[in-house]
Every structure is written in structure tokens, then in C-alpha cells.
Image (tube, one colour):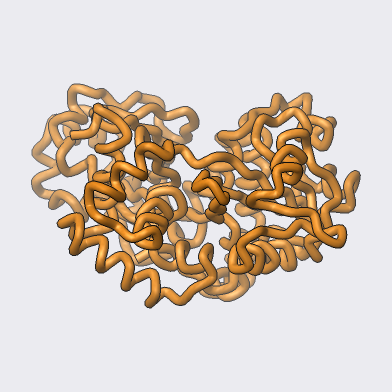
Amino acid sequence: MASDLRPLSELAASAGSPDDAQQLSDLISVVYDAAIDPFLWEGAIERATYFVGGAGAALFCKDVGAHHAATPYRFGYEIPLPVALFEQIYPAAERHFLGDFEQPIATTDLIPFGELAQTELYRQWAQPQGLVDFVSAVLDRTAISTAIFGVFRHERNGIVDNQARRQMRLIAPHIRRAVLIGRMFEFKAAELAAFADSLDGLSAAMYLVDAEARLVHANAAGNAILGAGDILHFVGGRLVARDAQVGQTLRDVFAPAGQGDAALGIKGIAVPLLGKDGERYVAHALPLTSGARRRAGIVYTAAAALFVRKATLAASTHEAIGKAFKLTPTELRVLLAIVEVGGIPEVATAFGVADTTVRTHVTRLFEKTGATRQADLVKLVAGYATPLAD
């Protein structure tokens, strides 16, 4: 199952009291600011740690086939995770990186605590720090690597419970958006004052739009895409997608963006775009009406920034997969979207179709490929894209 697609107002309400809802809203704003200023990540991770109910947390990035993960940003624990000890539980721990997007997985879901407590990893690393469990969610996955956000549970927090899983489901989609956008560019803190100007230097296409999809500004890469007239067009002063369903999805993203981070919710985290020649792109939306990002919104009277990049899988790779398993064009499109966009609800939202429609295609993919889980489909695609896959 993929992320909850209810409006964020309902999700925030589910967090509990009005104070809890405000805490979530404030946390989301800090996380989105970290997308444009990497120096803010540690503070964002600290607040997310306490929101989920833990003592430490980190962003983890692992290459396919590797038995260890890098931690570009972390909070709450000083002793690096020893690779040699981690490899003792690697077969189970790897499943943290194979889950569905944004869905919580606890270490105690994968290995009983009694068995975990007998490992040298627990005795030498976790126990001295008082750590008893770990809950994570997949944020990004390409053919060669996976990124997750994970929170360590201390003895005082206890084993991962339903409350921790619920809190992780609330914040994971927003951390995912920030990570995906942050990978396209990095700003130094001093450059935030010139944020709007810095956007023009991105290699990824970037569009600033108001709440009614009126195009306010585009960088050079964005203008090049508009000039090609393939995936996006400039019509009547508005940014319009060539695919009508994708266009509606984008309008559904831009309209609430003017009301702030909480109103946008989890829409527009990853929207697939398909060119006439089969080239695949992914778009990500970031609201500009709150936090440090508000400066760009004021300068350009923009409600949101839309970033568009080419998908990571080469055309030759997905053509080979399609031929090998005799996939229809739609089945192939759904398969690639599962890798680039997320689970069934996200893909359905991005394509503007019902969940049941996507689920039918996924069932056919299982039948044709022999896979039984969405994670198996991702691993299958990774195997075609890199020789490092198992």
C-alpha cells in the first residue's frame, strides 16, 4: 500500500490535538526549506525524530548491491553504524530499502527482537546507546540506488508501535518531496537571499506559476522544453501539459499551493510526463508561500515552483524490459511509474485514473514477470539497468 491520499487537513487532524496539527504544519515547512538549503537538514531531521517518537534519525542512501548505506544527514547518534556488524543482519535489514514508498517498516517487523538482541550489532552498537528498534520509509528509488528516512527508537520510546507508524506516514511524503527536489540543486545558506535568481542556474527545467497555473517565470532549461512543444506548452499565459490527465493533475497541485505547505499536501511529489518520442520525465512541485521559500514567491508573485527532470532509466533499458516480458505500452508505463513515482495510489493520481485501473495493470505485471510484490518489480528493473543487482 502506498501513501494516504487524503487532504493534508484531514491527515493533520488525525495527528491529534490542534497543537499536534500545528506541529505537523510547522515541521513540513522546515522540511521544505531544507530542500533549498541543505544546512537546514539536521534541524529538520531533529524535529522529525521527535515527531515520529524516537531518539535519533538519518537520511540513508544505498547503492544497489552494496551492503552499507551512506548517511549524508543525521541527528541523535554519534557512533557510526559499523558495516561489519550491520552485515550480520543484512538479509533482513535490506528489506528496509525494498519497501513501498513512504510506508513504515520496523526492524522488529523483519527480525524478532529476541533474535536481534543476540546479534553483535545490538550488543556492541545499539544497546550501549539504548536503541531498541528502527522505523523507516522509502523516499526515492532509482535503478542504481535507494534513499530512506529512518528513526531510531530508544528504550524510553519502546518498540515501534502504531502511533510511530502513523506519524511516519504523515511526514514521509514531505521528506520525500524535499529530497527529490533537493537533489536537483544545492544552495549555500548565503545564497538564500538570491534564491529566485539562483533558480535560473539549474540544469533541471524550472517553472514558477501562480495558483491558476499562469506561468510567471521559466529558467533556460524550462524554456527549452516549452520551445520543443513536447511535454509542456505555454497556452493563454498558462503552463499546460500535452497529456490532458497530467494537466489536470498539475492544476490540482497549483491551486492549493497558494494556501501554503499544508494545503498542498502530498500531491505533486512525483508526476510522470511522457514525450512524443518516448522520452520520460518526472515533475516535482514545491510551494513557495511559506518559510525561506516565500522570498521567491513574493519576488515573482508565484505560488509554486515546478521542477522537471529526465527520468533516470534510459530508453534502451525500458525497451529491453518491455520486449523481455511482452508488456503492452500501458503496462510498461505503469511498471516504470512504480519505480519512478511510487505505489498504486501515487501512480493512479499522477495518471489521473482510478486505483483499480492501476491495480489491474500491476496484477498483469505480476503475472508476466513472476513478481509477487511491487518491491520485486523495482528489483527487476534495477537488474536490467545495472550489473550490480543481485
